[in-house]
Image (cartoon, rainbow over all chains, first blue to last red):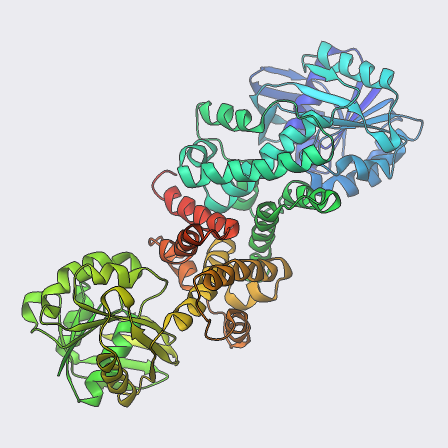
Length: 306
Length: 306
């Protein structure tokens, strides 16, 4: 069995390293970050933090170097999904099943334009790049996957991938309908990410400070109303994820705040933008999510119109 | 006739300088900015830009140096109104009429706790401090004043002050009900200020960029609904102020953006906070103004909980 991880940032590297270490499948990693890939080719991929190991991994910046695969795992930032899957599609042309483990919603739709079988996925592990070939594994967590309806992978392929990942140490639950877990994380992200990015508050401070804590709540209420209108049963309460994150030690900055500090385009279109879009389709008002989307787009715009 | 300008920043200095130059009244300036006041005492107050002159002015940082006055003009940032008028109150103990020309709403309520007759005011001229004793006069404009109901100055006092200011070159309109002009500027400020401060966009860019331009509109709609519920007839359309500002040359940064860049506490409580408060009192929902308020408060909080 062959599997290719597309997008080998922090989360993609954690998946690829665990799969490679388990040794059950031939594992490949594809990314455009030349330094990172060259370091992996020369010294292997090193993981630090919640797990500590270094593992050899077949990695490349060039899709032509890689074979056709049975499975794909897409782990790019959602703003790069389109280019990444356009480029990687030939690897998955023999009926492979390709699974997104990305933030937000809307990635599977893009993947489905280029590959035959798509798996919806949501993952909770988090990390950060320490340097070329070296990734910090900050937070362990489960992954939830299921068929993506319009071009669904058969359920036995979903289970095969879930079992492979679980045996590799990345606990993964296969579900007929994985939208609940995806929307729970989406609603959590669409509250904590823009508020953190706009106020510069780390997650704990923004949760404890009454005005922003209330804004988290109000944003979550809008997102939950859209999920209800879509008939999605959430996988737990997004507010518990907020509290759980705030109780963690350290001063974790939301990924969107990290993007803003680095002046990288954010994933807001796939977070608040997606909630607004689905709100419009279902007739649920989402004025606060729209305002967060407008402010983040405006902040990105200020980098080119200062 | 004696008149004291309390708060001698850009706007206060423009008022004090014009009154002193006209020579009709004895004019005094009170401020805690020692360097600015010392420079005025030594070299007079210099105005550049829309008018060019230097004028001698009796100025002090100490209320004990100044005589009792017939009129007061309060021009501090609204967050400093309380301390400033507590300190200056003895100057106005003989039934003086004290007029706010500050941003937002809520200043007159604070002034009324300390002086007998209060005049509501809204002013459109704008400027910036160039250096000690030297103020840039950026934008000319009218001032609208009227009795502040709960402890109203008699209308003839309002007219006397308006005529005095107008003859001094600061065109001022006396009205029985000056709430319309005040709320028009409030609603304008409560849209453009927080959006500028959160996105870092200058006024023209934020107006022209579709997502933030739409957010201006949505915030203005909420503010106009509250004004309607209060029975206030706006003095023109806040949206025209937005367009007029965007058409001006240069890249004007909203004052709240200037505050955020300098890490000074903002006037958001007197802008979006006031709209939320009056919305609650009149039963008009103001979720977007509340969200802007929460984000600006959060941003201020990040400076002490980074």
